[in-house]
Image 1: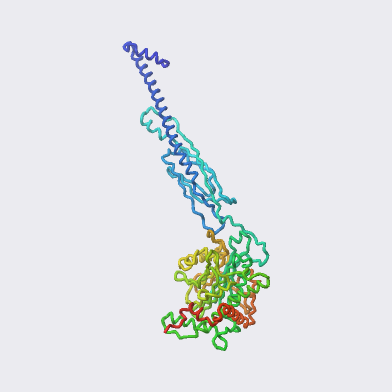
Image 2: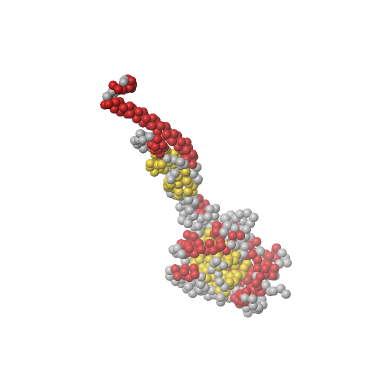
Length: 603
């Protein structure tokens, strides 16, 4: 009976049911049931296929939107290979798959740049990380990616399962979708810099320099570091910056100088070197040598240090609100001007002499100059300073105060400034020449614009104590790592986009400062004692000697009258500008304004 056709079944139905036995009736009923069941299942499967096709079609349309998002990744910056360079912003890119079916397997992504990964959270794919492509590339690098999605469409058949118990899903309804995208990676600027050696053998110069003065029993410690900038390294040029530090153990005077050679001057690297060595040597001689007597002290029993002590006492009493005993301010100003400005002027003359001997113009050696001499008298520090050009020059007390020792020279256009070889370097003394006193400070800092521009960015920012606190915290953290030389040279490699000039920093720390004490304890070995020697010759007491010190300029200090002649020459230059002015005669007009605390009270 299983093989009965519809025609036979119809014929049987038409027969008189009464003629059928119970057995035949049951057989007939079973055949009808199986037939109807088969037809229902066939209809259910047809509906299931329609539902699956509808779901696939819906998600195919949605896949176009997903693929568009895969093509719209933000451009990523490759990780820097240089240490100390800030990491670029981390990628966090989400692609919402919408109301998608559940996955039967984890999605796969092929072609992701190294450093980029993905996760799946619910119906969202999240891409995170930073590209870390180690191979060299200059142009933007396109990284094609493929995203494979594995969906189970069974969920769309739940309505059929609820509609009829006859529908049985025999296998998973799997749907695979492959989408393409693209990630563009830009090379980090720090990875594009090349290190090229200099071909010019005239005035060869080391790419970096370091020096320090460390004495446990003295009043302070000094560090100085200079490093060639990335721009000069890429172009195969020498370092234009320079510095010089010195200490006179017999008198306790410390000396610091920083100079930044003009990028447009072909031999400014030598100009900055001459400026630092000559200015420090001359300032040391004029302050410490008994053979040098300024014009204003001729025939008087007072010494230079007597005048400084009187000025310190005067300022201290004025600060405490007490009556201050008047002293010879005119003589003090004259001596101070002769000692400090005369030292800077000697550096200018030394540059002119070198240019003449080599057959070049002084402007070919153009350089800035930041010069300081300081000493402790009892509880008070006296600081003499002169500032020509840009950079930064400050007396800093952590968390309390920062005092700029002048104003940076800034031109109308970026990069313009005043240089030591210009007549303007010896005008506007109110902003250049400073006599500062303090009983407590954290550090005296001198820096070229390679540091100040990158760390501060503007003259206004130089006056913000918070910026100096950040700078000092950064320095203190670095000085706690490895040797002092390694730490400072490493610090000079910090990365600021667009700021790739040479970097030079000189700093003085009083010995009672916590950082100074830590550095003294950290230093291995004890520096040898200073011996009596001519300035700038051997620097035996320095535990580390810069490579260039062998070639340092040694001005002749056995002829003190030479400095007086220089002062007369400077005075003659001033007279040419205005016959009514003389070297010392115009002191009251040009120097008194920057000594407000030394001025006599008005009647």
